[in-house]
Image (cartoon, rainbow, N blue to C red):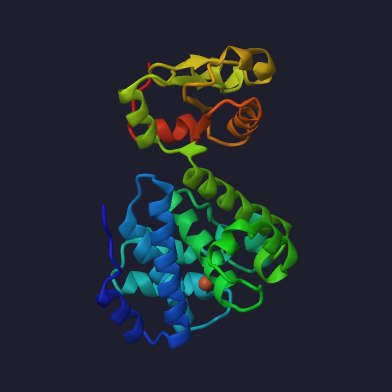
Length: 284
Ligand SMILES: [Fe+2]
């Protein structure tokens, strides 16, 4: 699917009173977001990436304070923008606040989690665009912002903010770079691999998780993540191995890191088994 930023959306921002610097920033975030979305190879709603990024700072037509997220969402709703777009405005402040952060910032306590990959890509693009264009960090090529992302966030509090925020941004960075590098795949890519056949699919959910919900992705074999050192030797190095855990978090990361160190070509499923079933795919 192709998506291009539409002139009518740009006009909407101008009419709403967005300043030229803010509009330039919004356009850059939308362009960067779309570029990254395409590089991930994941199946994404590109219109949501493009429009969510373009409108994320709509509230800056009123204020540059932290309340611009919430104000933007209200404005967006009045302008008739889809809810999927307005929630991005509200949630983009520091990339998905936790409850204590919302309280600290004096924002309404609610779920700011960026549940959709499209949302996380926008936040990542927003960070990258600032790093590339602020002139604070010496950047010669745009890719440097991605390559040195973690050290830049650690070195400049403007970008890392605090430990909680920094960890969250680094999490998005690792997930998205994992997708770009093929170390992480989405459910649609896994489906394609299963259709083609020839690979190895391992369910590496914790034993307790598997016992609580025995259903597995068709073709998968369960392996205990605690025993990875024992079973890693059985995996053929010349085939592609895909693993998944419950949610595509720490279990997948640690098992895949162990396998990668042993020279095994492995990828894990973004969002884990939850993402698979959330998208309506069946289990056996
Ligand atoms: Fe913003």
